[in-house]
Image (cartoon, rainbow, N blue to C red; front, side):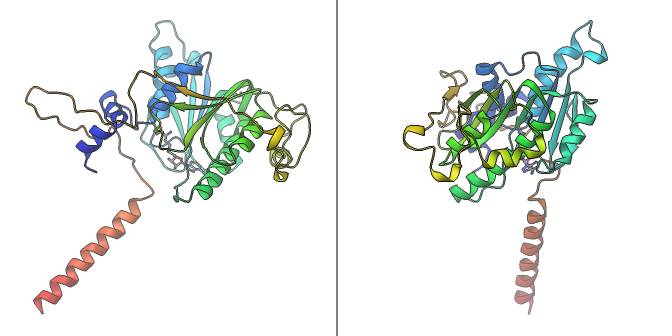
Length: 316
Ligand code: SAM
């Protein structure tokens, strides 16, 4: 699909470039905020799986820049934003970047060091593994990434804090909901308007972090293996189908973002311009070291190789 055609078919892709966001995902976080007011009172925030950085841009524009620009603010008032990803990303004002793996528990120590031993008010995680197209497999790997995020949360989030995480809707959504409910009394699964209906993606909005009494983050996995019922009443084995029948869990699912706003599944005509030719904008910030870079280099090298071979056979 060419860029102009994508501009027509993906209104949020076009709007992202017009508004200076590095990725269309920025709108998902903005729409979640419209519904849940997630930035209220936030001074320290962690952006897990942040590259290429559109969520970090939202955090910078919503939290850092307004404080920096207010006349009477001091350095000590400035919010702290720590962004982590396997991939490096271009700098963003007010965002501390850490290149690291969120499945490594030591990443939490790095965050806490940046917060001078204080805890975060908000952790967001838009992490996604490379999807295989095998739905069950993708859902499983995604849930492992969320559990890695939850491990970081258990180390760095203050009581009462919030956690926003991308999830893949699937047959284990109820289990994930119950696991999150062990730590957050309020969990809502939200689907922002900018996230396509055809996509299995949604977001868990977890509010008021309240770990079980005496909880030790090192034992998180043991606790999740024997997840309790949503009300915390019993410790039951999740493998025995206990979420079926009378125990079935009904998950609050909420559409968010202006519902009369742009529909991410529709095509929109390109805006009219004076000379009649709409010029497609370049991406705001292409990834600086994308994981597919080596593959492209190899492909280019091999197609050169083939061309050389073809030239040789024509010459001979
Ligand atoms: N929120 C980002 C934005 O708005 O620009 C987009 C995030 S992108 C959908 C998913 C990111 O997850 C990728 O940059 C990938 O490198 C990162 N990721 C996947 N697994 C990770 C891991 N184990 N640790 C850190 N980052 C990871």
